[in-house]
Length: 92
Image 1 (tube, rainbow, N blue to C red):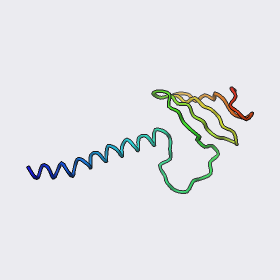
Image 2 (image 1 turned 30 degrees about the vertical axis):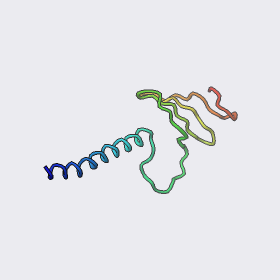
Image 3 (image 1 turned 180 degrees about the vertical axis):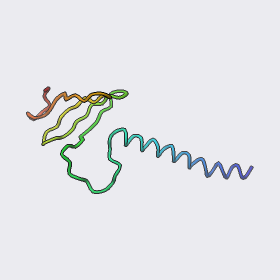
Image 4 (image 1 turned 60 degrees about the vertical axis):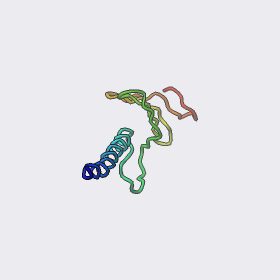
């Protein structure tokens, strides 16, 4: 009985930690966050924010050439909805 309790005390936190780590990693990959923690590289396109709307669909704001662009992203298509070239978001 003591052996069973010792195994339980060792394996239960291990399995819980693996489950938490898997969920954390899945969320990072799902949102498109880079996994590398090194120095930040200058990119032509930067992701400003993402809002999941449902399975396979998201609204995303990206910054490109000094302006922010609102995109609709689905499994098979990316559509530009608006940009802020005039100081605020305008449908384009």
